[in-house]
Image 1 (tube, rainbow, N blue to C red):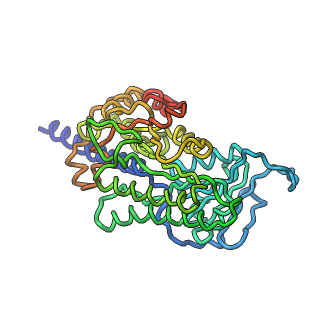
Image 2 (image 1 turned 90 degrees about the vertical axis):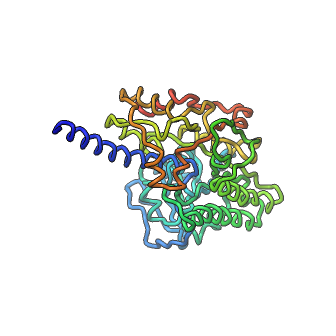
Image 3 (image 1 turned 180 degrees about the vertical axis):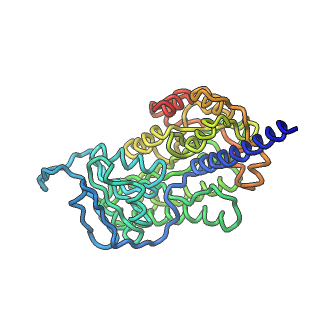
Length: 397
């Protein structure tokens, strides 16, 4: 009896630990299914913000609400030096999130100017760590100055949205919707209000999500598929509709792309970042029965797809940012277990997530099989096509 009691106690503790860890995983899944990068669009002043890093001694404040971190080489360039025709000036909302941080790093590395449209310069500095980024020009701009940042930008990337990884009620649902739509409307308005054509952004790439299609165990979705009928489908439709107005308000001069992101995978965040600790404790397993579809994308490919959308004029409207070979949840967890040398044996039951997340549990208990038809048509070459390739790189990085 004592051994049985001890066993049951250990099992109960293991279940609680696993439930908490898998709940974190659920939050990671939900945040990537409908990207949550920066928070909702609010005014925030941080006039005392500055960068004190050794590499940014030349940093200076330009007007209220704008911080410039210049990481140029010590030898100054001639002001009259002609800039490369390929250089972009990219304004980004949601730049401090899981995908946004890597996008900023990638753009700076290739010599482009980045303007971070943020609700808080202080928080943006904390998350982006400018002193660790590649040399380049990085502007941190608070909401009241977003129009100033957008004017003169060649491209805009909109990744902003309130997290959806919580128990939903009507107020939470309203905030999830408003944070995406209002931030997008603010960006679109700023673009349309740039009267000088030469200073108006020519491209708007906005995040959306594969939640646009709803959920299904049988259907296969591509960009031509109809939208679903659930709550997140309605959020995605409103999100994309708000972004589409940039094209209408500029008489077609601003190209608009909706990047419908799948579940973004990498080691240090998102769904997989929450899942790894559970497996390392030998307590990994699928969520629910494991039969739901899991349409995923490696973070490196997500960044590359956003960048491809900025420059490829053939990409317009919706594109699915998902790997060409989606998997079932059980296949994901089995593959992860093999890569880690750990079992995949302890599932999180449906009722546990339903009790904790209510309606929000549908984000991880249900899925959709989504294919990147438009990207494949354009000849985009995925760096990570299969879940095995992706997990091998992530686990062994």
